[in-house]
Image (cartoon, rainbow over all chains, first blue to last red; front, side):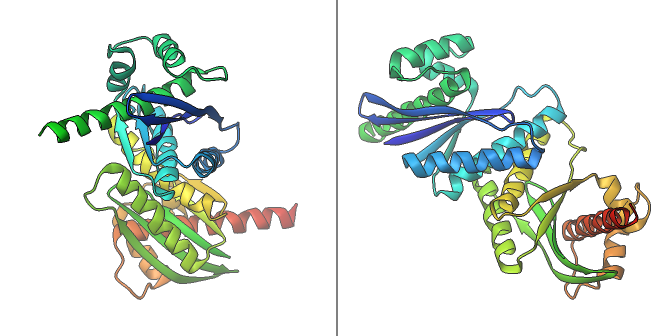
Length: 163
Length: 163
């Protein structure tokens, strides 16, 4: 199964694609979409078109995105929300089912501890996936949410088999 | 000039299309996109695909959308933001430039008073555009933001001519 992970943000958003076959995880690509300094609607357009481009190039079968809770106030929540909306519809427009995971579940899945520091996530992703290119924090978070989705899928399968 | 107006919302979003030629305003269509009770990402997908459908059917040249300030808290701002993001990228994906107007400017443009009640906007839109079908509040707001954009365009032109 090929999974696209997305870490939403209005100034830059991380993405990562991984292949999962049984216990084997393979890094396919990762990167950060920087939205530039244009008008806000143009920045949303960049998020949508760049993620659409990643999807059409790497053909993931499903997408996973981090839930956002930590907005400082209503104004920054509005900005972050709009970015997340643009990214989600880039996935749905390409026909991908989208799952959402809380930051705590993502950290739990990758580091085994829901309150892990950002740096630990980056470190574990480096160990688990050995990406060939340097890994920025946003891209590490995106790969982490993809792995979190893989975990949830495989436990759902295990439950289905044992039931 | 054919303008698409959008009133964002995560449960339902209004849209309206008007033609503006000099002082003449013609109602083309209006409606409300109800996003149903599905998962949140599915509701965003409905917003994106329904608005994309309206754009491809009525071929507006530009879009105008209401700014959102009145979110009660960060959680509702996040929801509203995601809806607005999905609607904006439906416009940019179709190649439409998107302008944003505050609720105050929209009311000012249509009713002549920035703190007008919602009902007054609905009443004035009914008078100005004589829509053939019944007009819900969200659709009236969408038509109002389209007229607000028309006003701003024509004053921009007047300034350019007199400069």
